[in-house]
Image (cartoon, rainbow, N blue to C red; front, top):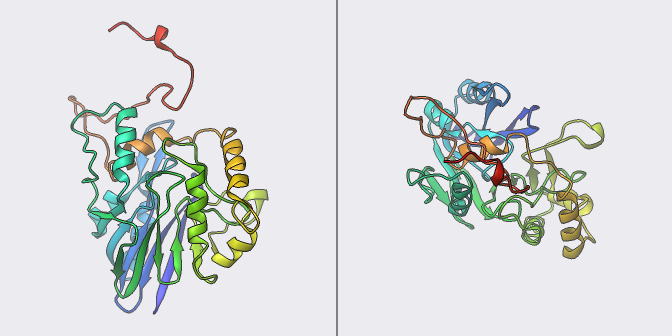
Length: 298
């Protein structure tokens, strides 16, 4: 096995994307690629995706697949842009339909929005195995942060999305629609039952305490030192901590545009009748007072 893992970091969203390649075949997978959005001006750009594309081309790689670990709430996916430039199937876990039904309702999508996952090229079930060149990959359904989260083990590397952060940061929140702290605890324990030398690559690092940027720790390091799910922490302790902590967290800045785009596999919503593109802002969709009296009469 000759596997290379190259990370790419976006400081605006504290997000990692990865290119995992097999040197024997020059085939690769791209994991959680990012599209840049300046929310204040409504400006999209492809700087982050361009860096990934340049790396793939400079190293003479061919893309087998673009793997999404989940429907991200803090950044937009650039999967369709990368597919247009490099090829590769866009893949996600089978519970995507749960997410599409939930957020299709929240954003009041009409019948033109398909809720069957068909925007994606490949739907992956728990336990599915597949090849990236000569590299063996296996999928793990790890609900909790969202109902549809997946982790992908490629040889001795495990890409966990938001299920786990670095050991000194713990785990992701569970208060988005469909999140479940008990389910997240079980998912973390499942992943931490893998061999101790398995390398866990995270999707975010917020650099607690101002430490240097980090993106990988072993299963053994998580077992020993993950502050949320390491040794000696019970399910009850975790759920109490997670629910208390989540109640203090603000919503991610890009949650509304991210969900609308990512539930479409990274495709933008349809143009309106004038040929312009808009994203919706559903009022109080994630809690808040009744503002019905403020609404204009129809």
